[in-house]
Structures are given as structure tokens and as C-alpha cells.
Image (cartoon, rainbow, N blue to C red; front, side, top):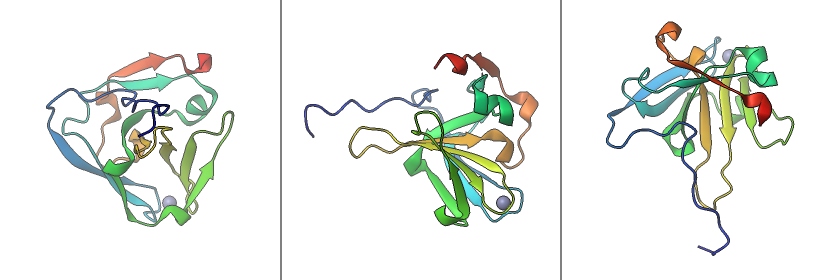
Length: 143
Ligand SMILES: [Zn+2]
């Protein structure tokens, strides 16, 4: 790897060492898009940011994070997603083309060969109890 490549980043909220991981499932409202992803088995164990940036505020976003190679579409395909980009256009905000549900985002990582960060909209995860999440205010407007 070339010397000018930046080191791989951590997830915005990294998983603790040795935590038990399981596969969680979710999808959009019309079920065109279904997905699964690896994340700590106790999905409520890590804080979720409650961000005040323009798009999170509009959507009431509450997200968890995993790596691109730990996230799979199990129904539908990339072509069934509409991609929205704004500001620096680095983040691919992904919604179902049919029902409009926002399932989350893909944030490419500039390190060569490193998987991107997947943002999962907690509201689209199966059997979730939103009030159990530890909401943590994040000042995204300052980014
Ligand atoms: Zn849909």
C-alpha cells in the first residue's frame, strides 16, 4: 500500500472489543428492499447519535453504523435505491424508489481497499423498540 494512503477509520461509534455480534434484519415499507447486517447482538448497547444537521432533523434520523462488507441486500438491488447527495456529496443517502423509505446511507472511505461505512436507519430495522436506544445529541450542524 502506498505511503500516502490514510489509515482506515473507526466506525463513528466503534464496537467494543470482543462484543457478541449477530445478524439483524430490516427493510423498507413496501418490502422491495430487505437487508441484513452484522452489529452487536444487543442492538441497544451502543449510543445512537441524535443529530441536528439539516437532513437528520428533517428525517428524525436515528442511526447505527456497520461496515459495507457487513451489510447485504437480501431483496431488491442497488438499482432499486434512489441516491441523494448534497453539500460535499460524499454521503450516498439511500431510499427505496418505490415507497420512499430512507434505509440509510453509504459513506465511502478514502483508504484504498477499505470498506465504506454503512449507516442504518434504526426505524427500518425489524422488531425495534425505538425508546430503548440511548439517544445522544450530536451537533451535526457544526460539521
Ligand atoms: Zn419500499
